[in-house]
Picture (cartoon, rainbow, N blue to C red):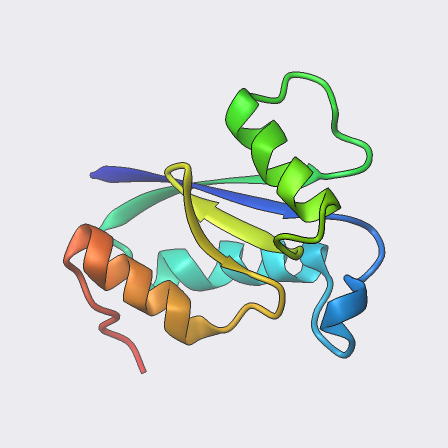
Length: 111
């Protein structure tokens, strides 16, 4: 079974550019429920990183994404899968499905 490491970078407050969007924590919870149902053939491992409070044991990769968020180059919540950027800001299903198809060659079999 292929392992997919999903990281959600976020913060307690909703991103200023993402008014009316779900919080980063809500997005994280949504992905934990959604992805294993839509892609049961993959083994998902989920991590949530609070960009303001989780500063210990971060990789250089994590720090680069957090720096880009802090510099307003990217928005949170920011989603990566296996260290690759997938989406940021207001997260929608279509870019996630596109990434899964392009990267793993599988499509969502549910409706």
